[in-house]
Length: 117
Image (tube, rainbow, N blue to C red):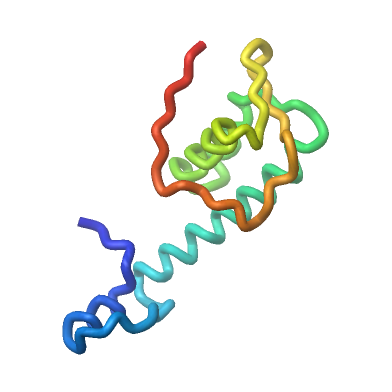
């Protein structure tokens, strides 16, 4: 089972019965920090590239899959569509930015997607 709690914090709790603070250096902390970096780069990319002209959704999916962490970034893309931050035109299969996305936008850990065509 994969953990999302700092390993040092877990050890501190186990041996000292205290929660302690996250270390920022273990593999779990590094993974969380990497995920935040990926999210901020992804938001910056979306704000820059979808603000002016409609973009074909399938081309965008291909670009995101090649240039970002594939599965999480595609999930981020679909979540922005579901949250109505990005407008999806079903007829033309294009996407446009409804409004600039704040860098502190909170992505959900997991989302379930149901799209009808």
